[in-house]
Image (cartoon, one colour):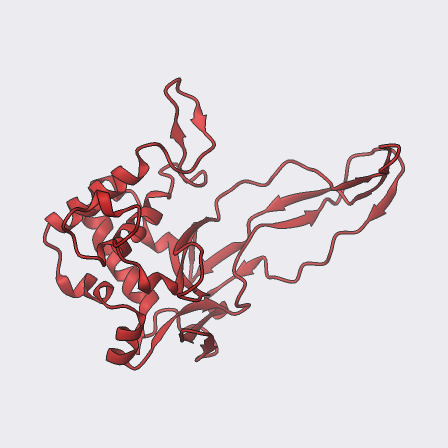
Length: 270
């Protein structure tokens, strides 16, 4: 079976090597994993997840009386943190998830990307998505890449007005370097064709599938003092705050589900 997340990771290595604008990325600090998404459903094809966000300022949730507006209760004080992911001795700073099998069905036809790639084959849409997610990685490792407005301040948006055009330039530039077709050839097939050709599609997921490392709330040990209110405890954590290679599983993806194949540590399986 084809290991789709591994193929994407290998392609990313070549893209970063051949694309000056992305050359700062250390892919040893980036983990590619798969999530499930039906091909006939709406939604994202891929997402870049940042693990370098700093701890938040202290805060709490609160409830008010609907008639008087007075505070009636609040949660514990907490800070929001990012979990830690380590593969061997290397700390992972970014995760990039690809939604299978939905990602495999992308094509330029009837997409907003079509105008950026005149006369290009339909599978170019998938290469565009891969480079799009890499472009979200911030050179300063401070989160998702931010873009400056005309006045020099940072925009809260993750896509600048020229973001899509810049991604298309990198896609076109990469292909112009004449990379080995064996590195990107798997993008030419949709999910049905891949399943027929390889006998199935597998990808890396996390042990707590369908979940994955996400920000979490941690109660403060020495909270600030404030008026006496009823305190609602935070819900206990149900997900890890530290992930290692032992938390990685391989799953076999079909059009309707994803079934675990191996127990652990196989994020680079063939």
